[in-house]
Length: 286
Image (cartoon, helix red, strand yellow):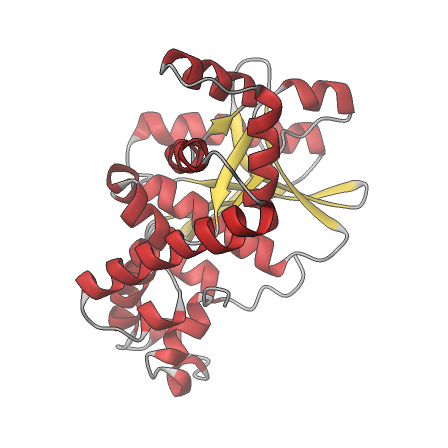
């Protein structure tokens, strides 16, 4: 069963009528909605976990789900003989969520740990993890396929709750949790003609998400949980403005923890929107 979206999460919690309220964002109940969003951000949307109140039971269920995916959906289905290697790769991938990943780097890491494995085996195991929808990858945006293949991909997982049980340190990093959740939401709402990329220039400036519809880049999204630090804001906006200039876009989106607003920089409009609000909006096709 696929994890709930945040709307489905709220309906399961009994907030069906509130979601029909066109003035929900201005309602006194929005404080409760934001509290529930924090739960969703940290513990994910698997239905049985959502309907369970105690956190220790939620975590037990999440561990069981993860073990089930590894044992039933991968080891049994694909006749995996090296269970330890698969589990090590899964743990390594969880540590890379919302971060760059390359098979060459992973291969060097396992070699440094005394684990003998070929790069092709890692590629094969990752394809299984992708086929069962545990992990996803987004490539760098480039008009040249050869250039795109030289760069790392970025890794995302199907549900933030898995991060809570697999990598507790990452589960406390709201920046990474937010970026992973944005990816899942983009994936959930994308059409067959849309693809998701990240962008990076030669100076290392990076934009988290580029949405390309067939041949045209239609949207840029930067995730910045805390926009209050001037240095962080300047770094994120420099990358965004540069990408907007490259793709000839006049507007882009910064998804934040709770900051909302707009500003114009170099004749480019930057829209700031809280993640909880963006995720509840009826976005339709991206």
